[in-house]
Amino acid sequence: MSESRPTDYMGPVELSVLAFPGTTFDGTIAEALRDIVDRGIVSILDLLIIGKDAEGEAAVIELADADGAIADQFEKVDGEVMWLLSGQDIAAAAEFLEPNTTAVLVVWENTWARQLKGAVDRAGGRLLVHDRLDANAVAASIAASPGGG
Image (cartoon, rainbow, N blue to C red; front, side):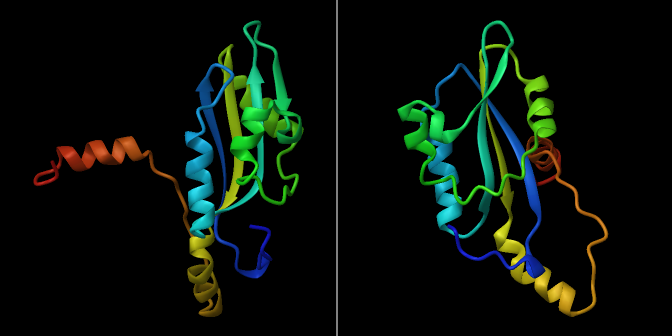
């Protein structure tokens, strides 16, 4: 995963905050992340865990400092950490967390888009609009459309 990243033709980079009840993971998220990294769909640029205790105090859990079970789940996912997540990013994410919640903050590059990005650039094109739509809302719209469901 520490392949060179051609910054001339990077795919879109996204930040996701994935929140889970409690303070443990069952490994499902780490397996899913590892799968999309292994298939070249994304490259993990930064990843960390935030925990919020019952009193509402938030703390960053670095993978190196996480308990063995959490660290083991993410060790093959967490690539070369680029230190992209700032203290401000972490504080903003922590604001959304309920007490007794754990979140994974992950910054990834959509590596699947590198080739398209390069082709657009070489053709003199540029990205005008990029938006992320809510998948559940799109699925509901498709299901409600004639012939959609």
